[in-house]
Length: 317
Image (tube, rainbow, N blue to C red; front, top):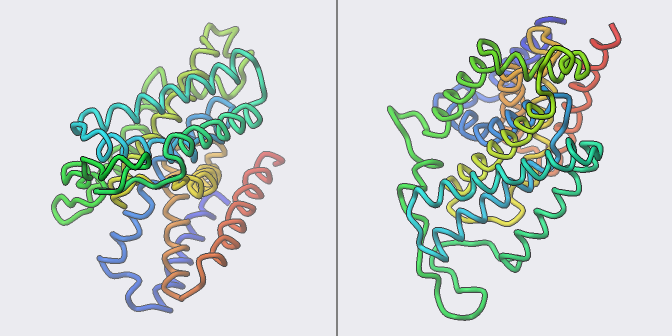
């Protein structure tokens, strides 16, 4: 059971390697890692909310909002790179604070509270864009002519650039996974996050500011979702409305698969990373086998069921 997830990963890689000789090429491996970089960022945010015993359903809509905000700042308002990066991250932090206020202060259950926020954010970004995606040289929605700005190369580098022949999003993902792992396991703050989620009352009696750490977790979740939205916009070169919706399920599945990696039995960022790799390899392999994209959702659902089964089986033990 302890290494069951890694064994499953090895079997999946072996299967696709035997069925397609292009699967283990350098180009395909980097494609897989680049494709999971955005999911991994979303999943890390979800992992933080799970560590404190919560759940954040608004991450997908936060990704969409950040994507649209980046596109609007570049194309509609011709803003500098720093502004284009900071504004979506601040929006993500604000959404995290709203989630924390609803869940921690008002005490609405996390699933219901963040679900409501998800609908609100979707409505906000669709209302703001009037349902249009944002791209370079597009006609303005109010009919005032052509948009003055474009997706500048410095911004697109975040999603499309390479360093030492490695896609920049892959480098960004690996560095962030390593930093978050060190933070959660080797700092006092990281241990307090786990204490908060392990037993809130015991943590409170031990002097841990439980509500503060729950708030931190939702804010971090929102910021990571916004960062994923920035990378997504830079990669596809447009501000795509509702682009983040499919990422919610992938991010949650990756975080849940992470519970079973190395028998951790709790949210952990290395497990989440491996969960994202499993999802990415499966989708890549199925695509190379010409399995229709809509049928791939069946596989995703199966993975989620399997991850939940493993998690609850361990808890029952």
